[in-house]
Length: 321
Image (cartoon, rainbow, N blue to C red; front, top):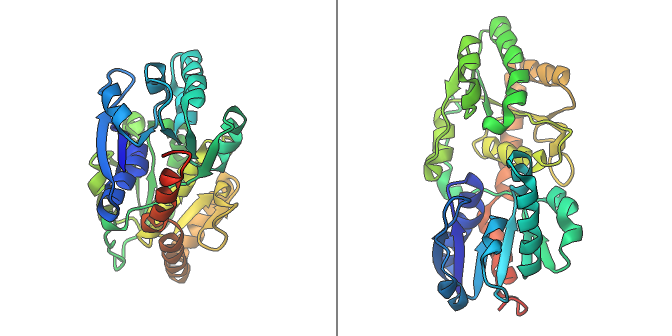
């Protein structure tokens, strides 16, 4: 079996395409060949696509020039972010219509994306939310006596960080704890001015989770705008990243549903978030309990190795091959 797969610089692509394909190649008789594709340039070669059993892609703009009639599988994960970020949403939506018409199967990144786009695709699909690769997760130093509260974001989440900065600043003054915000470059000056550690994003995804462990966070904040369904996968992913390292979290209520009930402190607003953080700071026993429960939950529910047989079956089903 040969898979021709899109490769780009996005974390979603690393996690949902590259990790999956690389592990499939190790465990099955599967040959992987990547093509590089962005909105600015394309390494896609139709000749190689015709030779492949499956073409796995993420960017719908690929389908504007890709030949019809091939076995395309679309991993549709971050496109809802793209709809909000693009300068011309009409072009993106047009390319999505073409992509849906050419695609044989779809892998939805979560139930919210399936709900948002499901009416536009009548073929076979499955939901595969985010997962982690155990090989890239190392132990965090749990013996640290100094409490450090951390948030992982990108420049998409400037408004969330603006909300968190005064809360973090207040907690540092009240409890003499440390705080750090990772990956939000647009607010670097505001973060530093508030006395919060600014931590640059690490684009070396093979080492990202060790990089996260090295920051020494003892409490994690998983906080995203709860009015937007697109934030559901972000909440799940960040919760899992913290939890796999045994870092207890205080989280948006979006994490409820198929998942968490007893593995994090759930908050519906900023006041509840601050109260939850104060509880974590004041109780070592609470931090320890959530740390153990969350780590066990993450390893049981977010393991890539448990997802691989599902991918294999999905790729090999006879209406694809």
